[in-house]
Image (cartoon, rainbow, N blue to C red; front, top):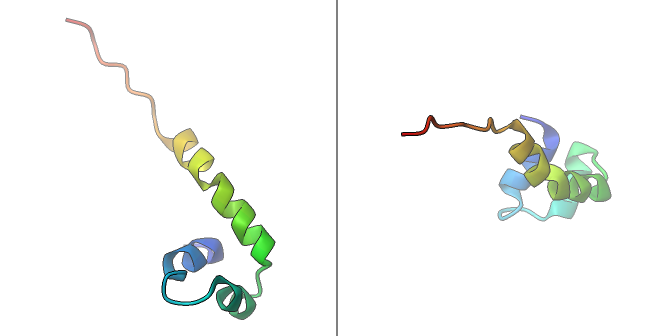
Length: 53
């Protein structure tokens, strides 16, 4: 698990600002990572081609 994922997993319990301070992350870097998370996830998913009938 990377530090950005840790912040994302715990942001409902603790403030993002405080988590970033403790982990020595820039908040802007966290939010940039979060914005690109969906793109990274879709890039890793394999495309399945099902055979026709």
